[in-house]
Image 1 (cartoon, rainbow over the protein chains, first blue to last red):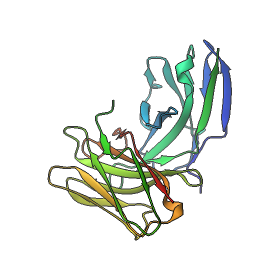
Image 2: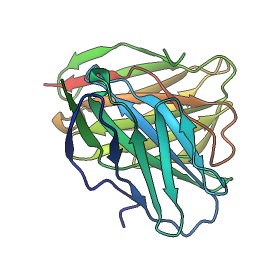
Image 3: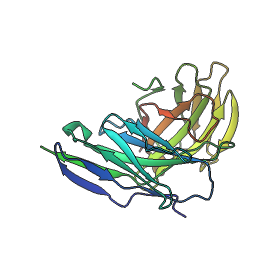
Length: 116
Length: 115
């Protein structure tokens, strides 16, 4: 079963606009963490933002915020005031539980293109 | 710069050969993870080490093996290479390996091409 689903293979947005990248997840573990990573064309994976399953507030990091809707099992990434440098692949990932394997399970990614 | 280093950046080799990928975690991190990113499989977890001990295994082939040394650097060994092993191999590290909220920081990756 797909644990992380990113339904938008590609998105095109005008510079300075806000953009929302969708992510839904599937888990029966009450304790989990959700992460977003950015992968520019150079290939590295850059950590952006984290949301814990018990967090009461939506996570924010600069221009990045996470729209966490626990009942709907969604964790959408919102990028405000997009910039040309935001063009990249974006991956949503989940880690379950406090013990045992702490592997990240990734979605298929969304390729974001910012147009000038 | 995440603080995780990986060498080499690029590797081109032939089928049937064996290669070793090396990773140094961020200073102070005890856990090292290996991931494979390929076009058809996406990003897949291979294996995790914590303070020198194997902690978890994912979809790692028997032809692949890894270890973490006393200085905490890790090596991923890929043998009897096949064309399908061509991929971007990432190493990531985290502080203690505990907790669902512990962030993993990724290295720049090693791009392996098997011809």
